[in-house]
Image 1 (cartoon, rainbow, N blue to C red):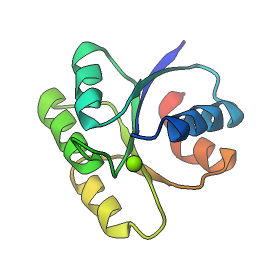
Image 2 (cartoon, rainbow, N blue to C red):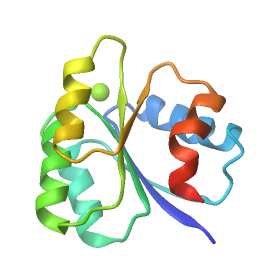
Image 3 (cartoon, helix red, strand yellow):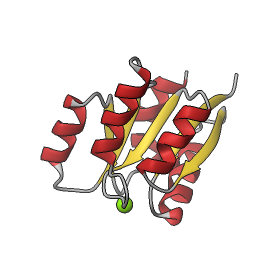
Length: 123
Ligand SMILES: [Mg+2]
């Protein structure tokens, strides 16, 4: 069955790379919806149901940390949220996990790493 995946990232290129990476990881049951920042992400969350949310950290309007918090406040029991991070952001990752994120994926990522981190949520 198709899984609904929300990708929140202010870079359209990065969103494409993530979608391609997921396909390359052999995950073919994902239907994607894209959002350009936390505000757009919240609109998507309010308007649909998702099995997994992937979120960037640094974004305008509402960053990834505030987005995780807002989703949790809105939904109570939100779908799993996996952060897309850059090297050297351990503190940010820790904070995101404290706020309810379920995992993180470091850029640049390989299909193997994507399968390892994201695969279990899309079974
Ligand atoms: Mg960004």
